[in-house]
Length: 322
Picture (cartoon, rainbow, N blue to C red):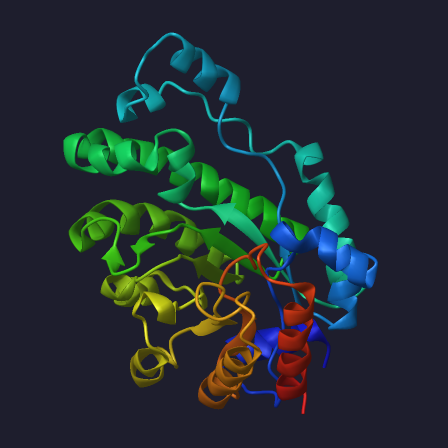
């Protein structure tokens, strides 16, 4: 069984006797990793990563048109945002780097490959500031819903293209949570984000591809909706934001898998090796053998030393591959 098969079976709830291993490590630590291992790719090979998180393809927004609107002094409200053209999603050359990454990780190393795609809420914080975006939910709900609907159609076509490339999972990044609760009301989520996210989720499910969600923070109030949408994997199920694994085990263990387990907010990167070991062992004792893929809960921060990162992954690999 190669890594691609291992991850797929884990997501389906068929425990293969090993826990897949992955991590979001390169964004802030690429230089120290390269000094210690030669390259980030060598680090991934050293720990025989089972997954690959791929980025690429076209972006949705015509930034030149957006800059011109801002330069004119016009506030980018939802109504104005609808005047900002979305870029084509079907230009083959825009996907060349994704094809290269799929060859490297998927064909040459047999890893399970998932591609980052836009969400409904988070990606639009590039048009509006997050503060304005939340305000617009209250002031201009009808206009904002039209912005969401347009974005959903673009996202659906993007998902179709990456599925055609042969990815194993469409990964939607859409931060909805704060440290204690949602960034907006559950009613707003249900009325505005759920139906537009469903446009994409339904297509991915129709295509027979796995579907995953990244959302930071406390999303307990919409976990049932996440299940209804058909997400197969949730990253990270954030304990440090009040989401205990006991809730997952009691109610959701048969509904979706967890990608996560190594908290970068409270555990990794603080020089407390005993806590790192204690927490990794605790998470494996709770989730090992279930729909669990070991990963960091977000990007490892630059205050984490390479020695601590190596300590954590040496231990995780020993526990994951007995």
